[in-house]
Image 1 (cartoon, rainbow, N blue to C red):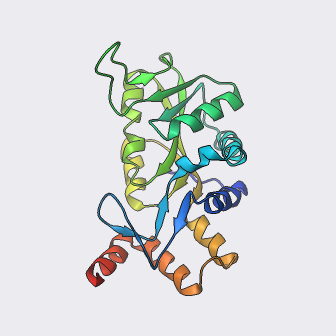
Image 2: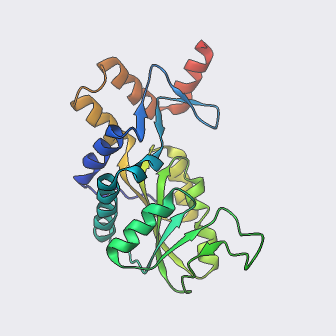
Length: 221
């Protein structure tokens, strides 16, 4: 189940991501994703690390979101690798312990997958930079639960809003929330006339049916 509480900071985050180029909208020259599909949007939130004010506003938005949704939080957990810095900045801001989950356990040393040693019984909020299909986010839930840690929810900076992600979170039995969604970006781009009307319409068509949108363009190549 995914929750999206109303928040005026969503537009501020959307504007920041567009201004620094962390999210690009290009319906006429689409991006090819790792899956092979074409999409009119591409997100690289690692660019936020370069901008102190932007990453500071993101941390503040995460803090506000935790309070609004009411998720209990004893430890902030980052996903490897892009979620780690944002988890660290948030943990410092709210003065809570921080940990992170590796994509797989180390093959040497103590062979840990979870770094930071949160004790069993801790309640964790997981920080992710981007939610696409939701699979990488959900992948950290099982090892945390196996370690006796309760996952209050998953928060991300941005989400494409794909239905497959909703299904993944439902199956995992975990709530998720994004500071900014694809819909927020498109609304902002339309209101500020960042793109012509035909491109805005194309973005909305992709949002309603990403697979069909991609197939049409692949067939035209």
